[in-house]
Length: 323
Image (cartoon, rainbow, N blue to C red):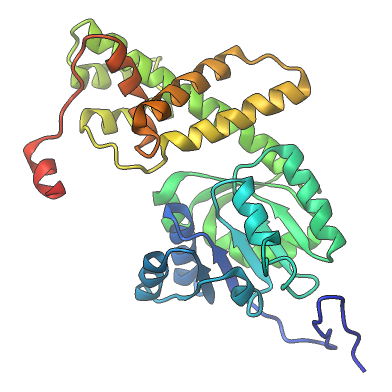
């Protein structure tokens, strides 16, 4: 008789390999990842609480289910592309959570930005349930997610990487293997988010300064992107301001969350980070002013409210597109 594990799954001798990948969270990043995997030839099942997101994925050729438990019965590799640690907890350990339904030896690829201490503890909890975990936060934005060209800052065991290799190959241009236990990947991602948040806030402040001095914002953008003061975030986000297009590719509230994690980790380490704290206050102010769900470039609206300068307005073509 084949041995049975505590969750009721029967281990079979020489079970056929299950290559189906589950993607939980079909937002901008998760949808792009799921479609990139489909394009790479992997069988993919998407999962999201939003019926419209599931319908969109199905229209693009994928399969979908409404609950993690349903997905668990068909996949041995599952990506969590959710917003925060609270959503990770709900997906894994909530009522009929994923962790209690997966077959032993399955792999969870945890892609959300979470505190390193949480990622480390999560890896231990899953290990005790005979599940592998890759701590694998991602960077690159929705366009690179769709193209399968993300950067993955990851850590985990050799066995976890072997199980997740096909999925990682399909979603990423570069997979950084940073350690053999969960927590290291999230630590590096936190450094990235520190810099990303500070650079966006600094770009907004610099543009506010230029506009307050009466400089044409288009001209200012052209000069700075060809000067030493440029940054990737300045070059990428300032066009949102110039077009007055605050459609959220990455929302203000994402950086309220991520810079709060930076701040929390700094407290744990007794490390003062006044620059990150200042950026956090600006994003918090933007969220409090009602811009939390707008693109993170909307942090410039805090400066505009506090001083007398005009922000660019949407042109006629944009207005027609919105109507």
